Amino acid sequence: MKLLNKKKSDIPRRRLVENNTDKVVSSSDIFRRNRTLSGTTLNNFGGTNIKPSDLESNRKHAHHLVNHRRKVLSLLTVVLIAAFLLWTLVSNLTASVVITVSNTNLPKTVDSSRYIKVIQEYLDHNPLSRLHFMLDQTSLNDYVSSKLPEVLTVSQRFMVGIGETDFTIKFRTPMAGWKMNEKQYFVDSNGIAFEQNWLTAPDVQIVDNSGASPQGSVAVASNRFLGFIGKIVSLSKISGYTVTQAVLPVNTTRELDINVKESNIMVKLSIDRPAGEQIEDMNQALKYFVSVGQSPQYIDIRVSGKAFYK
Image (cartoon, rainbow, N blue to C red; front, top):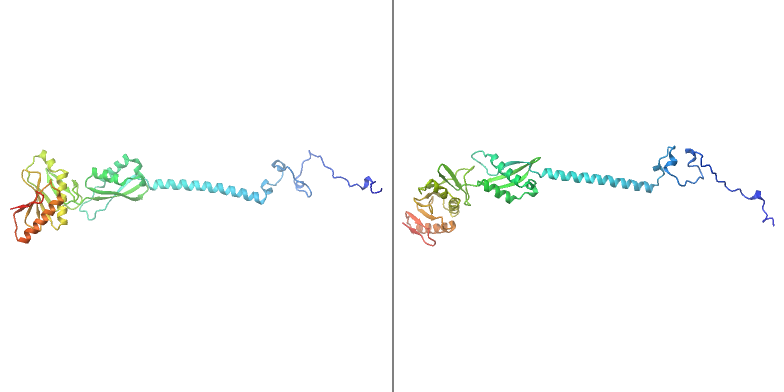
């Protein structure tokens, strides 16, 4: 029975809860041993030297570092992308044009301003073409050739400075020349006629005996006629013959007489027949007369499949 009747003095005294809410907690009592920290906020550390980050766990601290690193890397990536795009635009922008001539051993200095002006006009009409990767090379070549027929090709090469782009120009090689009414014409192997020649003057000069009036001389000096002459000279050279003179006979603009270096025979041609067919007929006719030992005054091959001679 004594076990059931314990004295009050034997019962352990309960821990008393202090209800001192108005008491100011000193910094030395915050982490006192055997004291439970619950509901701690930043306001509790107002008068202490302890930082909230000092209470973070290692895991939470690492998580904050990862987030901070991601923000820095994201900002750096945006800056690098913006710098790359800006440099791409600057390095591919054509603000001014620099001309380089691909033809070598030119007898005279080329007037670059003549070609810079036309290229700039094309870029002004096509603003997107100022970006290198947006330039239509074929369209540029056609535009410049239409304005300046002596240009065979024009191609964009590379940037020579900030906003400066180098364009390489190749001029047509004249195969024959023709002077009419104080105006000199030239024609290349493709039959393209032009007036400005920066290369060596051709050896073949057309002699005009047609007696055409000044008004008719424009038709005589047409691109079609000069183109025919250029093809004749070029195809003759391929066949092994060198044209030394081309004569436009009296009272006609449809016939062309040529002299070749390898023979003393004059060959009469028609601009209404294809140049290639007439050169083949000329080649066969000259070989025939050489084989039989004859040297006629002229050979007329204006009719297809036939050759007349005297």
